[in-house]
Length: 147
Image (cartoon, rainbow, N blue to C red; front, side):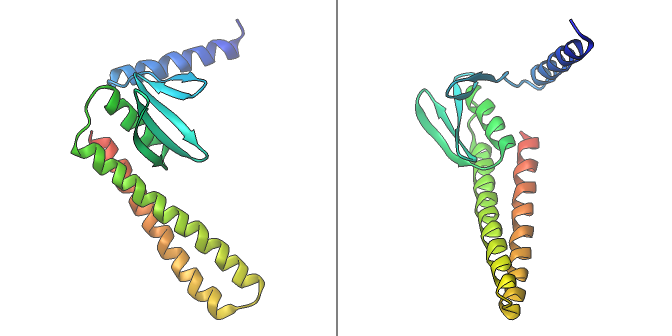
């Protein structure tokens, strides 16, 4: 075994140990997605859907951290009001992220066509949406760390 493969194995084992210490269920990669206990995290382009026993529980999750935490909570049957709050925070982030990206494209188009007044307005909206997205992401991450 080479030094690189030994180091990689050590990293994997250390990561698994950390997950177990945090009472996390180890994820398993399967053809349909990632299995965490009996909860499947399935990708839908850049979004994730969570299924438990083939039943859709949460759809269109934007943040990977949220998908993993919710899958662990569901797999351990710890679905609470907090899990719904985490999901709503993720949905808020997703809404602002899409708005932010849309405004960025509109801003670039306005700059290309030399519509300076429109570009200025779009830049302000773009920056506001970016700030809202970051706040929503921080809120989701904060909620994850409390559970």
